[in-house]
Length: 306
Image (cartoon, rainbow, N blue to C red; front, side):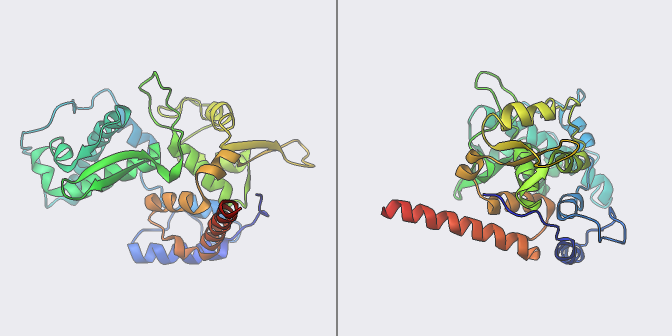
């Protein structure tokens, strides 16, 4: 179900500037003249505040403290009056929690607030809501995994693949890392590009996240291989030559499995969780996503009646 390619800088600029002002975030990554910036660049470039490479090095580095067992000790170097030191400490606690959540996901085990609190150093436990929020954002962005509360009495959470997608890129016999985060980002890029995105457009956005086509990535392996050998093979993406292109160029579109399992609204809202953007601040894109979903629901209802 292709769409005409579009560029919506003016609407996105208004929406994102409003969001930036409301949240106090600085819109400093872009030049003052936004006329030539595509909708995709605005949507994906504005709020990548932390180096993904740095985050990954902290998450999977060799010098991480052992977080296999619960922490009981108090930490003497808590400085509640030094915000920068505190925020760095909370980030480290969140990343330790992410490693625990990944193990629970791979073993198909739920988690409780008590479980997670026991993994946090005692002196930082009063900041648990902030730590959990940071950990959830990391799980959503990097791995495409949602942490959903299913029991409000005992505060039990399950770890599920986001946006209705059923594929996580982890081999059944290997305890690898889920790769749905990259798939959702690529699907969202394609949507914001009007239903088809050139290879160049895809890699320009992923470059901002320090994900390069032929460079080994700690989560995604060789990203180009993941897109072509996994996402295309699994029918989440389609890969075609651009008609009439000279020199020859290729583009990606949503595949049939993507349309069957998720919607444009779900992938847009998933990204919005990370970026801090309210989807209603980009009404044309959001309205198109809603119309697509309503149209799909109407077609499903018609088929059921028949």
